[in-house]
Image (cartoon, rainbow, N blue to C red; front, side, top):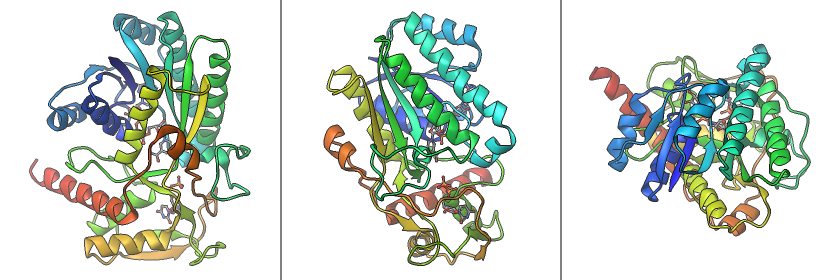
Amino acid sequence: MKILVTGGTGYIGSHTVVELQGAGYEVVIIDNLSNSNREVLDSIAKITGKYPLFEEIDLRNQKDTFRVINKHQDIEGVIHFAALKAVGESVDKPLEYYQNNLFSLINLLGSMRKNSIRNFVFSSSCTVYGQPDKLPVSEQAPLKKAESPYGNTKKISEDIIEDTVNTGIMKAISLRYFNPIGAHPSTLIGELPIGVPNNLVPYITQTAIGIRDFLKVFGNDYSTPDGTPIRDYIHVTDLAKAHVVAVNRLLKDQFKKDYEIFNLGTGKGYTVLEVIKSFEKVSGTKLNYTIVERRPGDIEKVWSDTIFANKELGWKAEKGIDDMMLSAWNWELALKKSKENK
Ligand code: NAD
Ligand code: UDP
């Protein structure tokens, strides 16, 4: 069966393509390579023994989107990762974010309708919860006003998908990711942040390897055990596997409602200092860091209620924080080695 994966050369997309091919699916990737590169296809082939089909187009272009999806008549389902995702950048460039993330979605859903493709999985985010009133946060929690244009694109996208499902033309699953980190155990694929990383874990590994001087820990005056914010970090391969489960659920008619939403997290929260401690332990490296002011827009704490996903999907995140940090470190070491060999 053929699955279309948009954003399939990106961080989470590439790991998901590996899992899909491992599960026997044929994959077509659409990506405009705005935040990834073509060599990822070689790495996927090295891991799985098979190249996915690849279409380099921009989903904002309606004609190209229609043309490519029409060309692959036998697509059974779509997983939609393609989006811009930098929270801070979205504050400076809201129109680019709304245009990219919403026009892409609308073009994609329109093309699916035209070709009677009925199964859709969407990359959403725990940002839609804002600072939840109750923790762990479950799928039933009320959504808060988005902290950024990026977060708002996820909220609006979920609405667009629900409204489309309500017309009866398709079924969909939105997956709300918590904080994906780490890399494939082969160290052939992983996260490739362009420029200075915004996220904690690539910043830690780049500091430890000498690319950055020190990590700034954004605030230690939060109401948490050590004063630093708490997040639910999830290994990217655990996350990728959940997408195969979601696709199977749609294709095998195992869904309970035409539109379903699942949290994807581990259910455990770690403070920034705990993440650093885990990194220092598994890497045997002392991290240079300093406490600075809070980062605007950061929430204090969030972790996932995993009961619904565990029960309904029969899926559970397996890797713990030490495994995740070791995998992120091995990826950074592999990147260094490959740069030295170039
Ligand atoms: P990524 O940037 O590594 O991958 C996204 C891919 O989409 C890139 O390869 C990019 O080139 C492509 N793309 C972007 N706009 C496109 C367009 N208009 N047409 C075609 N291709 C386009 O990001 P990621 O971390 O893999 O994230 C994947 C999805 O998961 C995104 O929707 C993101 O918002 C969501 N998400 C990510 C995180 C996270 O922390 N990484 C957390 C929650 C949700
Ligand atoms: N963080 C930090 N220094 C950094 C980057 C992040 O202290 O250079 C903290 C941030 O304040 C948050 C946590 O690390 O509490 C996770 O941030 P990240 O940007 O990775 O993910 P977010 O939860 O914001 O999506």
